[in-house]
Length: 340
Image (cartoon, rainbow, N blue to C red):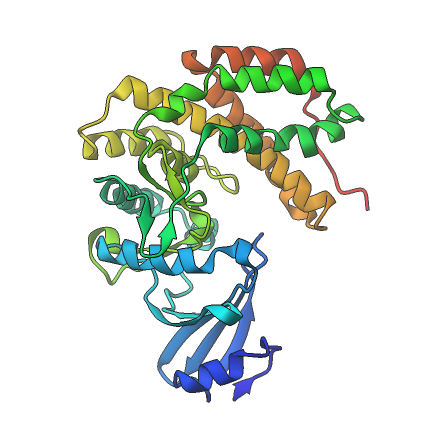
């Protein structure tokens, strides 16, 4: 075997059995994830080996959903083989033309890339998700989970800004503010929510047609929930700014493609999902710094605060906007710098 990397113990036999025993192997990172990925090269053939042994990585769900996405005509990775006992999945290599990297160097095709990614969501949301795929049940993105994720802002970011943990009174007021707006998450809430449908997880495949030009990665955490979530994840990217006006154009494109939607109700759901996502990631990125030693995520915090304020400006978010104005106003949101 031609690898120069440290493979999981069960991987060599698995790869040999699947005809990849002579492949050259290169490990590559997966951003904030704890899974391991290896690119296999054997002549003109390439494939990806994913190692995700921890049950929390939901590998069986990844396999079922990849097949569902492909069955709906989209470019999820083809699953060639799997060994779930050892957390090994052999899958299609969707290439190296990642949205985030492409747009970091050249934004001339930005509108084309985002239109294609929006069209994927239109197609995936054209019918509800079932409550299970194969032997795997699909969790609902319920109010309790939405609130628990929003509280990551208090768990990790609040102490950095305030110098102390949030009190019980602060937590009660925060929860009450969120609960007053969470009913907006009930609209169009039986769609596929991939959770991290954004530029680092999208690959550009220009040789394919229509929505199949977008390769979709990293959907282990997918659930059933509001269709607005993945759209706001795409258009309010935590890691990059879109060209002015592009977000509004793509929201209009999505609404035109989903002619069954009530625009006002969708707008409120979009604002809620955007606010919840921003709050969650404001906590997650500080956690990645403090707990996991990854300070590079601190650079994105100002963008996330801007996303939060944009969504709080929606009239339906007034109770939540009032809580942030009283407890975390803009003047208290100082930049965080690595101090280690």
